[in-house]
Amino acid sequence: MWARTGRIRSGGASRMWTTDAVADWIESLGIRPGGLVDVELVTVGGPGMWWPDMPDRVCVVELTTSAGLFGEEGRFDTVEFRLSVRGPQGDPVTADREAERMALVADRLILEATTSIELADGTYLVSVDRPWSRPVPADRGRDGGRITYQTSYVARIHD
Image (spheres, rainbow, N blue to C red):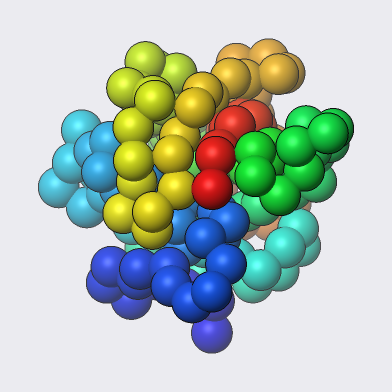
């Protein structure tokens, strides 16, 4: 129900960054099937929402709450999103190393991405920062022996 199926473009009257707009930008960095980080990209509607059982290698994008930029709320905005990268099944040590490697490559692609650019939905990406630590293992409970790494990012956008 929440999984991405192909490229979904944001549209409508508001040009604020939606989950799909964030995912489109992430895809453009090479975090996609056949990309530098070879994973299926999935968006979910909020924390705890549905994650697909398959494929093993998946990157989940979720919008989270963040403080806006006061005084310019609506023209400039701050969007926080969580990126979770789940690795393959298999030997726990090998699976953990692969999940961590994918998450760290995705982290570098996001943090080193070109900013001050116009995005496909008409917003301008001003900057992207990681306010917390590098990607760390996340407790996903029983997930078929697969390991998930996650961290959050703050993007500043201009409408």
